Length: 236
Image (cartoon, rainbow, N blue to C red):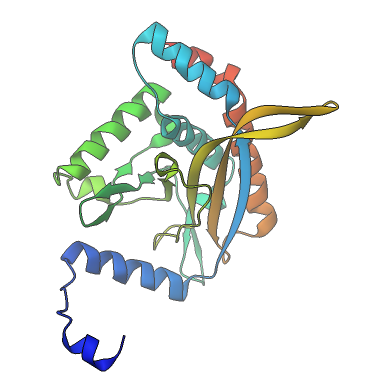
């Protein structure tokens, strides 16, 4: 843009929400050494189970609900992914408080599901729905927005194939969930179509190394691919 173009432009002040997002993510991006690891989960059976549960119980679970439940249970096995550091000491958390990124007018809010490790799939789904509705209505309380230990951001509904998110300050990792895509995968001498969903973990390298991130994603993927393990909860 040349000088004449600049003189005709009127600056748009950033909203308080936009400024807060900018300040927090700039702090994270400039002070936290971050790296990413990606896996693709085969959610073919999980989608089938979700459809069956909707028919039988009348309730509709989202893919995010299953991801949240799988993350909460997997974090119990990987405390470093649920910890906080200042670069000198590490503070493990005794609870799994999962932030869920919600798109709102003018920005992004991250309400927190507290003690997610204690909640059933149905309870997680209900709480995620309540918080998303409150975020869009701008009625979240201070408690709804505080003490997160890990964040999940899902852009799959926008058809995003893969993306990397920035770790929220005070947390050690964030999971970016992409769209479910029909993909040809090798099977015997040919190929079969499977529904694959890419998940990218961004982690604080001061707390998490590549091998640990890979093991966490492997456990998370295994949980999501084991549809039988979710059957009783999904159909209740």
